[in-house]
Image 1 (cartoon, rainbow, N blue to C red):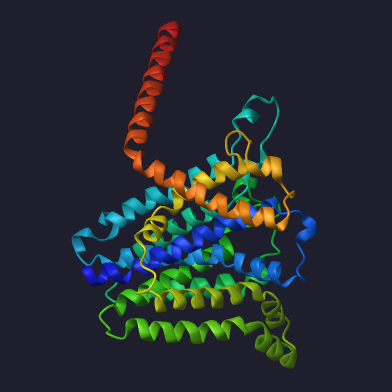
Image 2: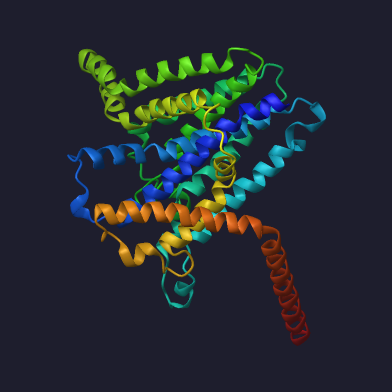
Length: 383
């Protein structure tokens, strides 16, 4: 058991680095003045490229660890709907979606007659991660009774293939026949930041990686083999647009040309694999307990950063006052301070979490009691 736990420390380290990258990425992207966003500038272009790795890493690592924990349980009595991870995962997935909607809400808009807050309807990263967890649970429930667990891995890999390779084709659909709240999960026509496809493809890819990792857990050369494969496949996928474009031009196949031009998703898979390989190589070097704690509390960090930066509930965040106004040096220094302050607030919250939860439960009980009294009064008046 100790060996298995130590193996997965690198996952927490990856999540820690990814959440810090996300914090500084959101800060700089939201507050840096437009005149400094020059793709011809080596520093900005490098930062912009690295920033694009954050979400793919998050989705992949979420799928990896969740699938690993799902298939880890081998006791038939504790599998299926009785699986603790299934029950927790369903609650987690639903909670993530609810939190995602709440973070985009502005309470002041509730008092504006006739105002429809379109921002609340937009789909963001938490919506898609929550829905991805529910999809992974569905895959597990469909396959856990099978003697050959490879069915789940085939479903995961097949979903990844469809999500990425056919994105240039299905991305043009508008889903006008669906209600906007539902259509926003599939299209960016209404300004959704993320859509479930192709992003679930990264979660299913992570699930496939987690599946292979668990199945080969007893292999003494597990890490060596994984690192070699991740580096090899990573390099191939990063160069994918070049050689796929050559094949498409030679064969004059339009669908292949579309896939080649939709290269950013495929290249990001390569980036993710190299990212995993790097942290596997450094698994005995980067073992900081602080980083592990950061990686284990990414949701709290995300929520706190969102409130500070975007002003959830009130609309009064840094974005409102400094949007597109900072110079590069101001943005860099501000991003560093923003990451530090957000993590410090998160750690403070974690220390007081039990007390805060107790107060929240007390308030919820009082609200419930108040509503019951109102309901009782209403019933008496009616009859």
